[in-house]
Image (tube, rainbow, N blue to C red; front, side):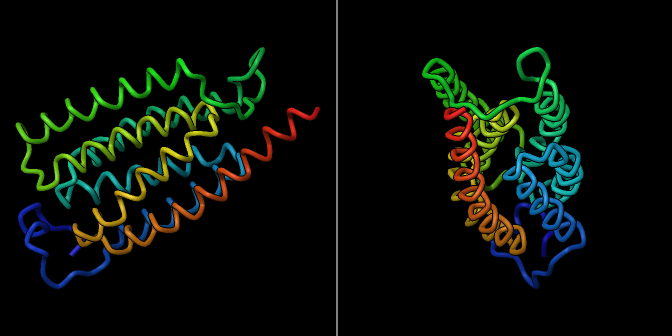
Length: 206
């Protein structure tokens, strides 16, 4: 069952089925990642619809950090939508670039501190059955979203790292369609990575 409490999920659940909300998350999620790979700014509003669906889905499955993450995603989506259209030089379209060494340092520090803090919050204030995995995937996703909003090539590697964890995590939580979706996400991430690398090489030749 997609909408079960955390205790049911931790025991393997009984009589799993796919909910309409999970189907909505599947469709909007797949479309969003495909549009990101094509650098289409419409990925952002589609992504907001995906966030709403996943907020409901994850909360009902005891993935509280992932659920709360969807609210942050909406805020970042608004910023990302603006950045892609007006975030370049002199408010022009933003181009693909690489993450600098200084940015990587900040990302690493934020990743470690964020995971530790969120893990503590989940253990202390929620009934999460997977606090560490919920925390680390949430933080990886936030860092990847920042990179996506700034069109940093390396955001794809962060998404892939998160997806590798998400697939078994969602299967454990009996969100089987969502687990399959995230396998597809990994494939789309590889396609997006190759596409963005090609774009930055093409720009370098100009």
